[in-house]
Length: 490
Image 1 (cartoon, rainbow, N blue to C red):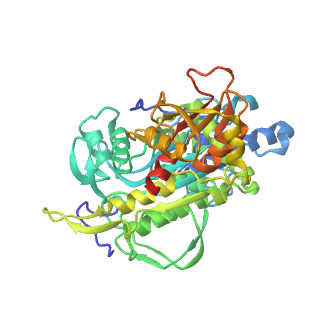
Image 2 (spheres, rainbow, N blue to C red):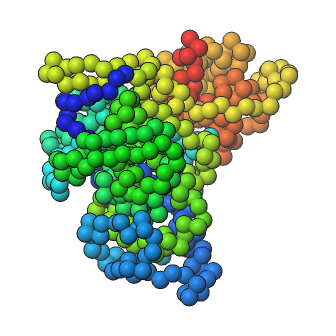
């Protein structure tokens, strides 16, 4: 946290929660992953290093050692605090190209990023200075970063109403199952009404080391900042200032830029700066000329992150997810912050200033961010007539927790002339996007369903078996995207 907990001066179905520590080399992939966009860049780096090493002789590549960085000329890399890096004898990875496969799932993945505020080598419970939900849709090849202010005043399951950054603290202090990350996950799920699949916690040193080891960042600063009371790593002050315009930042300055609240928008401005820093990391790593320096510096980064990053993201999922994000165009990554259109300042009975959520507005923003974009399909003038000629029987299974959604969808489709033979519930209520399974040759009916329900064409397939488990020809599993659309039209 930047300042005391009671200071605020701004104007305006459960998964396993087991925590793991990834191998050093896997954390190397995760080194610049403080957002989903950065995951992609990390795997790009790994593949490029491996391919370059295979194509070149030993004399063509810079040498590196796990025990020294004396030969590193990058001024940003020289700023890394080597005393924070843990000793390790774990060998470097030896992976074949086939070991890293693209993500094969079709469901949306949500990852909670937590920046942990721990100072003076403190031991014990700590708070989260940064709370950001990253979401990736593998079907539409899109992603988003959704930032939550730390002073958001909401219900923490089992602990009553408090600031959202207290969830991590309570989870640690009271030995909640899964600890601070698990309670933070459940708190965000309760607020937004979306599942949180994984978490990633990063402390200040991990961030500083990662930025320094990629050579720093270029940030276009929109307004000058002067923060005379920026906190040092203990409980004193380390004044910070920065001018307007493009600036080159090392890890320490990038951390200050991402953490300061000394602008008119306070915590909201800070969330926007944090997102800008994450996207700048992605941009920096994506440049091919970073390769030689990163080869030299990678071992130091791996060791640092072993101590300063934790996640419940399984290793195989990490690799596959990184390959997925690598394929997402920069234009398909959006950002959202709960600014003063979505919260308002209030003072609690004990004198704390907090941000109270405007729930209807937040719900609308959530629906916008987490609903998959509709992909246009070709317009066929007589499509309804062609559909009717196929005489396909359609089953509607509800893949969401929304009660009665299948029955409402049945009414909707029957008005369009579609024969609905069966309604029911899917095996899971966690479908984020709707699916269409054709148990025969009914292409026009499938096209009609895509057109009228806004289903992604990639979410349709022909069944391997010709006989369905019921008296129908086509199965539609409705997901959160359809729930959002039909509720908006009702």
